[in-house]
Length: 543
Figure 1 (cartoon, rainbow, N blue to C red):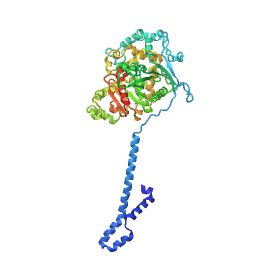
Figure 2 (cartoon, rainbow, N blue to C red):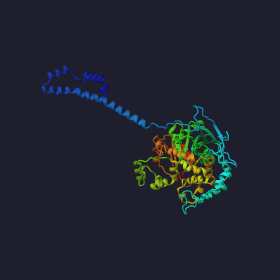
Figure 3 (cartoon, rainbow, N blue to C red):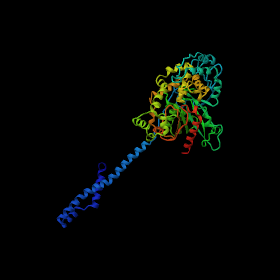
Figure 4 (cartoon, rainbow, N blue to C red):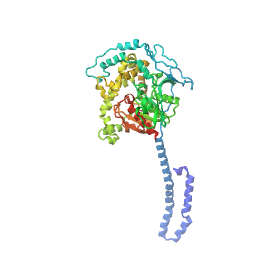
């Protein structure tokens, strides 16, 4: 290759070598006249072959180092490109009902918001601006006794199948009890006061109003660092899921949690189309758009670096946030991991793991939670995912019925809080609901969907995500390189072993096998989750 590229230089080098080390033709002739014929023949052959052999040795002396440098350079570039951090393009979007204003014209103010109700009406207003939906628009629900109560009174009871418990869905006999409590004992005014105990805000991002609560610690002990923590809910939850865990994170000492020297200020937004966040008016609003909006929210609040945490859709959204702006995410904590893509190699590991789990990187606890494989990863998932197929294809069909019937809405939502909390609750007539939650807590979450008319828009979120990425694995190839903590709760719908999670989350700092709890970790086991978050952050701060 070099001879072709630099022929003149190459010949010049060879001629200099011959001049220095080889005999001239005259010297050869002199040598031949003096020596014997036999010796002359040997000498002549040696001299005649010396230039060629020497030429080849000199070529090797140059080519071998050059080739080594070339191969080494290619290898270095390959390794460097392999470790180069890939990111998701942040992009931009507009989801408002009106045309997008000129750049920089969007209202960036942060407006205080208060949930309001009265005995006459179940309505939500923006306290700062007095914004109210027009009659007939989502959000207007009429009077409490004349609308909601009448709908509850018109509940048409469906006799349940004897011995069915929750195998057919929400047990209608127990549903009758829930409706009676809702109609006669549930105090919505009191629950509104509970909801308002934390500061609420609205701000407009990409054309829609984003609702969030922002809770700062009331007292910060000397030497303690305050870290911003964004916590994102999923479906069919809401920001209300975090009400039990917020005081544990903002005031840990008061609750017997002294994990290191870190306290948090907590920001809990509502996903657009959920609760008090405005629903997108355009098609295509997915987890990437949500991640971008939440980054903009944190930036608008003045944060350059922050921790993020999520489960359910919150896991997907915060993972995308870490993939989008890793320089802004100090750490990512999850209580659910999405690893959907299968392969032949993974199938082989699944089969081997049942007999020699250590051989495929499974711990004993992984094997206990993962097997029998067909029961826990196929049959159980199929039984619990019927809703997903509806919402990922034609959400409005079922959604319109749920939006019109509070009883239907309650049954649809609360059934998830039964078997997603503990799979064994399937065998109980009351779904085990009141063993983990109070009816006031459960109905408050339902009311957030009811009074805002957001059940349909929340269901559409499945359509927007699954239509683009049917197995939710497209962004797994990007990888997550920020420090990651995973809390694996034993009653989660699916278990993802650490060795599998590492395929996507390349920098796992903590992976905890939680002793109890299911899908709604912050709502069900707030102290366990708070402790795991604190331990994770403490380790990240020491890196």
